[in-house]
Image 1: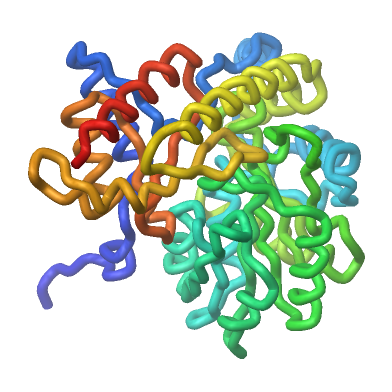
Image 2: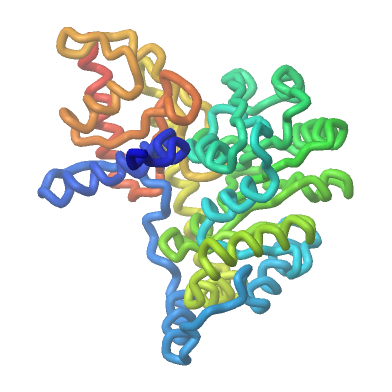
Amino acid sequence: MSLTLSKKAQAVKPSSTLAITAKAKELKAQGIDVVGFGAGEPDFNTPDNICNAAIEAIKSGFTKYTPASGTVELKEAISKKFKEFNGLDYKPNQIVISNGGKHSLTNVFTCILNPGDEVIIPAPYWLSYPEMVKLADGVPVTILAKKENQYKVTVEELESVFTDKTKAIVLNTPSNPTGMLYTKEELEKIAAFAVEKDIYVVSDEMYENLVYGEQKHISIAGLNDEIYKRTITVSGLAKSYSMTGWRIGYTGSSEEIAKLMGSVQSHATSNPNSIAQKAAVEALNGPQDAVVAMRKEFDERRKYMFERITNMPLVSVIEPKGAFYCFIDVADVVKKSYKGEVVKTAARMAEILIQDYNVAVVPCEDFGVEAHIRLSYAISIEQIKKGLDRIETFIKELQ
């Protein structure tokens, strides 16, 4: 018998967003003036009080194993946050703390899916969802939400792909990559559908603190007792507190699911980083001024980027209501020619931009849609202006 490798692992697509970010960093290291719009992380430093809590944890020797699903102290802080911010009653034994939101989602799919179970994933989606489902032996079933409905899925669309194998729906609000936010009325309809069909809702609320304008973030699990029972709420500290590298994510779910996830995690990683857990307690219980300040700065960048793109030829964008992305329709761009060659795809557009204009953007084929790109405004306003100038120059040179 010859040596072989896992077919499941070989089928996994590498993250195109991380690849693009790495390419931009590589060019910058060579001294090239690159503007990177790929970043899925805030450009702010982690607030000082959070960093100081981590330093104190190290000095005091809090550097050993913790309980597999996280410390009681952090679970209590998360339980309090769920109650006060989300209006959700998750007791500490319903909370599992993991090594980032990706780890939390991986735990969820591992614990709710059996081979062949289907998970409905509305597109545009965060590119990791289908890969996570497949790694858990599930079957991702994608459905394209319409631009005229702000890229949000409707119950009629969910109904069209529902089968007797459907186990769950993934809901992401605010959305990566679109920045869209589901309203209470839209969530109520999806909740009624999930209850009627008796399926899970995996609610990814990682960007819950980054909501702009009059609309508010609403957690679907808080709508009624029946949807609460069927929802696994997923969040973390990466985006709200500029703690992407600290790797702290968490879930709120039924006690039964939480116990399963804790058991799986005990074999996979032992526990989340002890020092990062101490920092997370300070993040949640300490002053929230930095969160407010970051959100205000993101809002200013959002307004600027949206206005600039709206005024560009050949592209269109719907105003984002949350997160820190603009999701841009480039269908008219890819029909044009650049140096005698039809652009054809968003991926090719991204290649041209980084090679000839030193701008890194994320093409969204891996997000389940064609002819769209994602721009992050988690970079300085000066970089945003410079990068958009370059993109506009590229568009105007098309024939």
